[in-house]
Length: 489
Image (cartoon, rainbow, N blue to C red; front, side):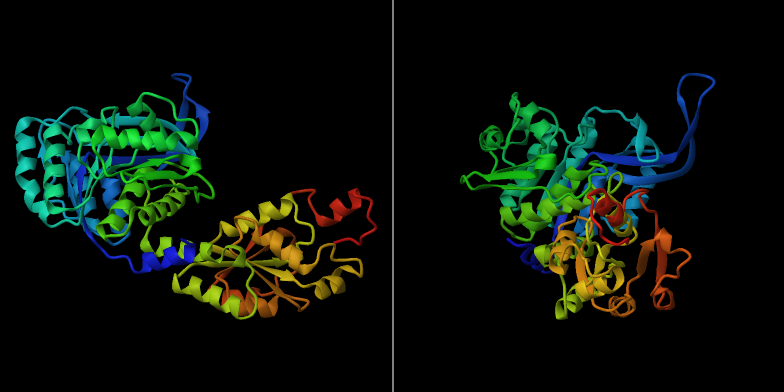
């Protein structure tokens, strides 16, 4: 299925009601900077500047589902403490039905506090009581489950090993869901997958699958047998194994299987990626989509979420917009009406468009750094390229070294570039007005020259940003090192 077809699936995707049952965790991120070592002990001192709370565990699953506009009911256990009250308030803010959350007087709300300097996690502090809930609480959960399952189109068991999912709860959920004919998806914990017997599918990562099977799974060739063994162990309809940089493998009990390569561009943080996967699988299966399509959607969503810090989620608009950009593929090169169509897609998705321009005659490391910086200033980057005649007028009769079509093809192959177009004028003024970007980026060497298009962009509510340049990198220096008599850039 091509990305544009998958985008249509997202745009037509329903909003099923998903019941999430599992371990509730409050994720707290304390960020700051480290500039000295403590005089009390040989440890760094974090000067904290910000603290942020996010829903973790089954709560992050609920957040992912709500970001995709699904109806969500969450069931779990919290403590009678400020963290538990904070978490219940966060569910209310999300629009999740949380009346099924039990308050346990004898255990703290599970919290994971991460200390972060820059992008580096320095320490994690866990507050938890990781043991099964007591029989009275289990009985309370069991009494409430039939009515909640009756309203759902899919159920997720989010097992983080903190005690909410007792064997009695798991068996009751699976049995009642099976009677209703709705899928039960399990994010498993531990090595005994037989405890999930009768579920629709499990979603272990490679390491978790290795632990459950008691053997290493070093290559993709090992995945079919691994999936079959997992399904046999727990009497499952399917297994989905996430493989990090290798994407995802899925298999159904009828033998149908497939491998989906990763779509991650830059991995920043894998925290909660499994929650994103199971959430998107549940929405798709709850909306009666086939497993292979559900896997494609969840794989693409996971590729987006690992580019974010901490437990994060992907909105419906974000997923649709990303698929829209992918659907162009080699059609990143957009001329004439294609440029208007590309810009129209981005505007429909309310994406912040970044524009920059240049000759890009011999693309080098300086260009790559520059374009990566430009892309970081918004949601999508479009590059305007001088055509051959305009390059000759600026650089002389021996330039360009590479023809326009070749220069555009190279730029289109770069992961940080979302669109490439060309212009024939000596300045980019007209193409800037046509693109009407939210951000215009030029190199810092233009600081005193006057940036063409500044008045237009700023006059239309955008901004102009000067990008740092990599010293000693230029087309001129490259050509000169090669002994060329090419004129200076």
